[in-house]
Length: 170
Image 1 (cartoon, one colour):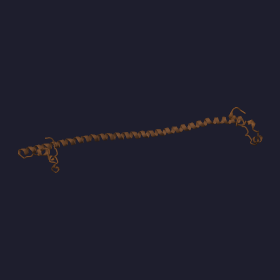
Image 2 (image 1 turned 180 degrees about the horizontal axis):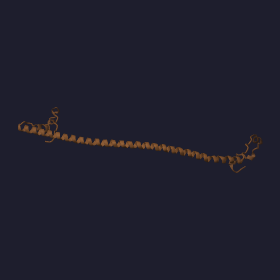
Image 3 (image 1 turned 45 degrees about the vertical axis):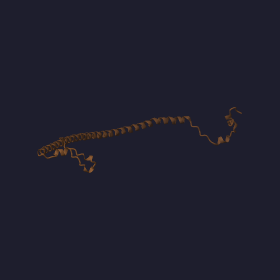
Image 4 (image 1 turned 120 degrees about the vertical axis):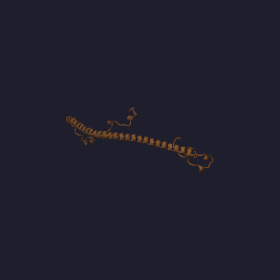
Protein backbone atom coordinates (compact mmCIF):
# COMPACT_ATOMS: atom_id res chain seq x y z
CA UNK A 1 0.00 0.00 0.00
CA UNK A 2 1.41 3.39 0.94
CA UNK A 3 4.56 4.15 2.74
CA UNK A 4 2.83 6.52 5.15
CA UNK A 5 1.10 4.75 8.05
CA UNK A 6 -1.57 7.42 8.53
CA UNK A 7 -2.97 6.76 5.07
CA UNK A 8 -3.18 3.00 5.50
CA UNK A 9 -6.43 2.92 7.52
CA UNK A 10 -8.22 5.29 5.20
CA UNK A 11 -9.83 4.29 2.03
CA UNK A 12 -9.55 6.48 -0.96
CA UNK A 13 -12.57 8.19 -2.44
CA UNK A 14 -12.13 6.39 -5.68
CA UNK A 15 -12.18 3.05 -3.82
CA UNK A 16 -15.80 3.56 -2.60
CA UNK A 17 -18.61 2.48 -4.73
CA UNK A 18 -20.42 5.43 -6.23
CA UNK A 19 -24.08 5.74 -5.25
CA UNK A 20 -25.86 7.87 -7.84
CA UNK A 21 -29.27 7.40 -6.30
CA UNK A 22 -28.35 9.29 -3.03
CA UNK A 23 -27.10 12.33 -4.92
CA UNK A 24 -30.16 12.50 -7.15
CA UNK A 25 -32.58 12.29 -4.18
CA UNK A 26 -31.45 15.61 -2.58
CA UNK A 27 -32.07 18.46 -4.95
CA UNK A 28 -29.42 21.18 -4.92
CA UNK A 29 -30.63 24.74 -4.50
CA UNK A 30 -30.66 26.67 -7.67
CA UNK A 31 -27.59 28.86 -7.89
CA UNK A 32 -28.28 32.55 -7.31
CA UNK A 33 -27.41 34.69 -10.21
CA UNK A 34 -24.32 36.74 -9.40
CA UNK A 35 -25.86 39.92 -10.67
CA UNK A 36 -28.73 39.67 -8.15
CA UNK A 37 -26.26 39.30 -5.23
CA UNK A 38 -24.23 42.22 -6.48
CA UNK A 39 -27.33 44.42 -6.59
CA UNK A 40 -28.35 43.47 -3.03
CA UNK A 41 -24.85 44.19 -1.69
CA UNK A 42 -24.74 47.49 -3.56
CA UNK A 43 -28.08 48.69 -2.09
CA UNK A 44 -27.10 47.49 1.40
CA UNK A 45 -23.89 49.52 1.24
CA UNK A 46 -25.80 52.55 -0.05
CA UNK A 47 -28.22 52.34 2.90
CA UNK A 48 -25.46 51.77 5.49
CA UNK A 49 -23.90 55.25 5.24
CA UNK A 50 -27.12 57.25 5.89
CA UNK A 51 -28.09 54.91 8.74
CA UNK A 52 -24.70 55.44 10.38
CA UNK A 53 -24.91 59.22 9.90
CA UNK A 54 -28.36 59.30 11.54
CA UNK A 55 -27.03 57.21 14.43
CA UNK A 56 -24.04 59.55 14.81
CA UNK A 57 -26.39 62.55 14.77
CA UNK A 58 -28.51 60.99 17.55
CA UNK A 59 -25.40 60.37 19.65
CA UNK A 60 -24.25 63.98 19.13
CA UNK A 61 -27.64 65.41 20.13
CA UNK A 62 -27.73 63.23 23.24
CA UNK A 63 -24.21 64.30 24.22
CA UNK A 64 -25.07 67.98 23.65
CA UNK A 65 -28.18 67.74 25.84
CA UNK A 66 -26.19 65.97 28.53
CA UNK A 67 -23.49 68.66 28.44
CA UNK A 68 -26.13 71.40 28.79
CA UNK A 69 -27.67 69.67 31.80
CA UNK A 70 -24.17 69.27 33.21
CA UNK A 71 -23.60 73.02 32.73
CA UNK A 72 -26.81 73.75 34.64
CA UNK A 73 -25.84 71.39 37.43
CA UNK A 74 -22.38 72.91 37.52
CA UNK A 75 -23.80 76.42 37.85
CA UNK A 76 -26.11 75.25 40.69
CA UNK A 77 -23.22 73.59 42.49
CA UNK A 78 -21.02 76.67 41.99
CA UNK A 79 -23.69 78.96 43.47
CA UNK A 80 -24.18 76.59 46.42
CA UNK A 81 -20.42 76.51 46.95
CA UNK A 82 -20.23 80.30 46.92
CA UNK A 83 -23.06 80.58 49.45
CA UNK A 84 -21.39 77.96 51.66
CA UNK A 85 -18.08 79.83 51.45
CA UNK A 86 -19.83 83.07 52.45
CA UNK A 87 -21.49 81.32 55.39
CA UNK A 88 -18.18 79.75 56.38
CA UNK A 89 -16.48 83.16 56.29
CA UNK A 90 -19.25 84.56 58.50
CA UNK A 91 -18.83 81.73 61.00
CA UNK A 92 -15.04 82.16 60.96
CA UNK A 93 -15.29 85.86 61.73
CA UNK A 94 -17.81 85.14 64.51
CA UNK A 95 -15.51 82.49 65.95
CA UNK A 96 -12.53 84.84 65.88
CA UNK A 97 -14.62 87.54 67.55
CA UNK A 98 -15.66 85.08 70.27
CA UNK A 99 -12.04 83.96 70.75
CA UNK A 100 -10.93 87.58 71.21
CA UNK A 101 -13.79 88.17 73.67
CA UNK A 102 -12.83 85.03 75.65
CA UNK A 103 -9.19 86.11 75.78
CA UNK A 104 -10.20 89.55 77.04
CA UNK A 105 -12.50 87.97 79.63
CA UNK A 106 -9.69 85.67 80.82
CA UNK A 107 -7.32 88.59 81.13
CA UNK A 108 -9.84 90.64 83.09
CA UNK A 109 -10.56 87.67 85.40
CA UNK A 110 -6.83 87.17 86.02
CA UNK A 111 -6.44 90.88 86.78
CA UNK A 112 -9.35 90.75 89.23
CA UNK A 113 -7.90 87.64 90.90
CA UNK A 114 -4.50 89.36 91.29
CA UNK A 115 -6.20 92.43 92.79
CA UNK A 116 -8.12 90.28 95.28
CA UNK A 117 -4.96 88.39 96.24
CA UNK A 118 -3.15 91.68 96.78
CA UNK A 119 -6.04 92.98 98.89
CA UNK A 120 -6.06 89.79 100.99
CA UNK A 121 -2.28 90.03 101.42
CA UNK A 122 -2.59 93.67 102.55
CA UNK A 123 -5.35 92.75 105.01
CA UNK A 124 -3.24 89.90 106.41
CA UNK A 125 -0.24 92.20 106.78
CA UNK A 126 -2.27 94.90 108.52
CA UNK A 127 -3.85 92.35 110.90
CA UNK A 128 -0.42 90.87 111.59
CA UNK A 129 1.01 94.32 112.37
CA UNK A 130 -1.85 95.00 114.80
CA UNK A 131 -1.36 91.57 116.43
CA UNK A 132 2.36 92.24 116.78
CA UNK A 133 1.67 95.62 118.42
CA UNK A 134 -0.83 93.98 120.74
CA UNK A 135 1.63 91.13 121.37
CA UNK A 136 -0.77 88.41 120.23
CA UNK A 137 1.03 85.25 119.18
CA UNK A 138 0.78 83.35 116.84
CA UNK A 139 -0.09 86.05 114.37
CA UNK A 140 -2.42 85.52 111.46
CA UNK A 141 0.53 85.47 109.06
CA UNK A 142 2.26 82.79 111.12
CA UNK A 143 -0.88 80.67 111.13
CA UNK A 144 -1.50 80.99 107.42
CA UNK A 145 2.03 80.69 106.04
CA UNK A 146 3.83 78.37 108.46
CA UNK A 147 3.98 74.78 107.28
CA UNK A 148 2.26 72.29 109.58
CA UNK A 149 4.24 70.79 112.44
CA UNK A 150 6.00 67.52 111.74
CA UNK A 151 3.08 65.39 112.94
CA UNK A 152 3.95 62.84 110.33
CA UNK A 153 7.15 62.10 112.24
CA UNK A 154 5.04 60.49 114.96
CA UNK A 155 3.42 58.21 112.44
CA UNK A 156 0.00 59.19 113.73
CA UNK A 157 -2.15 59.96 110.70
CA UNK A 158 -5.15 61.08 112.78
CA UNK A 159 -3.26 64.12 114.11
CA UNK A 160 -2.62 65.49 110.63
CA UNK A 161 -4.39 68.72 109.90
CA UNK A 162 -4.79 70.03 106.39
CA UNK A 163 -2.37 72.79 105.49
CA UNK A 164 -3.81 76.28 105.37
CA UNK A 165 -4.27 77.65 101.88
CA UNK A 166 -1.63 80.03 100.67
CA UNK A 167 -2.99 83.53 100.18
CA UNK A 168 -0.06 85.06 98.34
CA UNK A 169 3.46 86.19 99.12
CA UNK A 170 4.44 87.86 102.47
